[in-house]
Length: 348
Image (cartoon, rainbow, N blue to C red):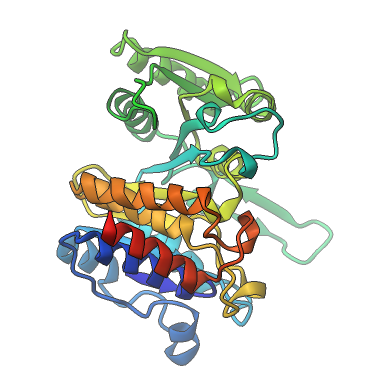
């Protein structure tokens, strides 16, 4: 467990509280990686840190990283991106599920209308930090950021999305049947061409799933216009980062958004996607539900499906009864939401 910085230090304890209330057979080890450790002794990730996580643990629960005292944000980059890249957590999975109509800014949208999943390639693309700066600080400065896409990387995340579509029904039990690939192949012809070819080739192995395509700008527009049309979306690292924040707006904001960083069959990492939010840190106002739902994803990944479902049901009930933080219409603090959800899980 790495609570990290800012509100991560507040929401992760609440997620742990509900896991413990579920009775899940989970043992926690806490690590102090974050801004405070970095400022104290210069450590971002200890030597052999990622190898140790993969060797000794089944899953990792992470809060958030980022602290204004670390202007370069180097610790956040080395810990969070390092974990994704060096542990090869290639599938970033972000469920987008609306729990209550009042949380969605769109008119005439019900919970059944917003229930899709974005699978984002997590180890390549422009976030691979390939490139450089030439003549920095001069009028001739040039910055190059390479977009890296490999056949292996694209194929495995496309296949993961198709498999996910087959094995993860919607909240109401309805089977999913469509996977949409989002790209910008009309402008980014080299990388886009690779994604197009791989998606078509792998998609033919899944004749029961309808393979669809949209350019990412049109996808953003359609997501707002009619989210009912989506089941599973698969896309590259940068586009996935952008559209999942837009998608979070459909479910009540980033405080409700959960994610898993998955390498099937290996140690994987689960985190809420809201960031460290320094302006509200330490004020007992941060929404812990994204962390709780991330914890539920972790339990499901570990084979503890019934415990995961109880946590999800408790969060849903808290939203219905407005036992929530102010950002989604309630009046409770972070700790009070955690206590209420944990109590519901324990009784359920």
